[in-house]
Length: 130
Image (cartoon, rainbow, N blue to C red):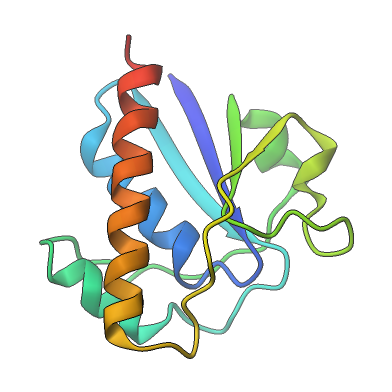
């Protein structure tokens, strides 16, 4: 089974939303997410905006990225953290989606980011399941 690793710094919003969307949509692949400096918990606004679309990520926990995660992944996608000192995922072929961090922003911004992630994940699932 193919595997995707979504990475952002805190693993508290963007990468968690991407993982949840991917795992809901994909039939023949799985995703996980991780961060380079994981937060203590998933951002409550990320939980709220995902709940609005019927996906519960309230039990998700931010995780530290590991070499094993990178080596097991067929695709590594960073969510906009592509800087050498913060995102070591660049040690393997990596695609950066350049998605703005919604932390500290309005619920409307979280919804906008959620929809951008949903659209990108739909395209990724279609591509990987051909």
